[in-house]
Image 1 (cartoon, one colour):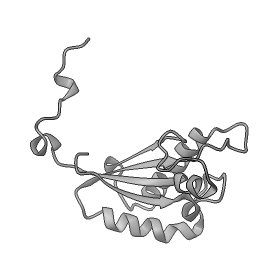
Image 2 (cartoon, helix red, strand yellow):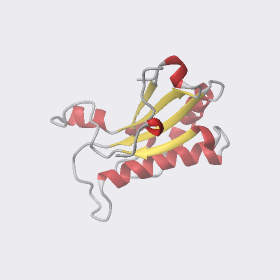
Image 3 (cartoon, helix red, strand yellow):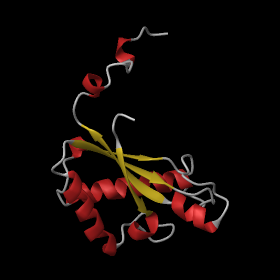
Amino acid sequence: DRGAVILRINDAILFDPGSDQLKEASHPVLRKVAGLIEPLPLQARIEGHTDNVPFARSEMSNWELSVMRSMAVLRFFQQNELLPLDRMSAVGYGDQHPIEPNDTPENRAKNRRVEFVLESIGDYREQLPYLIDANEQLPF
């Protein structure tokens, strides 16, 4: 899809269970990711994902946890001046985009992840002219 590359990191590397605070041990991993992305002409969308097990804290849903985790990663890059903000975005999907069925502990662990979706900064329409630009469509 538009030549995107997805770098997937298991949430256990970055966060303690149920937490949206980055582990200290995750910092070298994130610095390495930034080092890979920084010299390339790519946008980085940071996506948070969870499994379908209800979140233990009733005041927060899995969706909210996924958003907070993706924002924590974005904030780390910004605070450490590793990647410019104009090349990054953060989004959380909760349990809505599983990569495996949530039917075993192993599969649920695979679904708890942070993904870096890397896309070219260039004009994708030059490379894929058949895509329809929503701005060129009639409003109905």
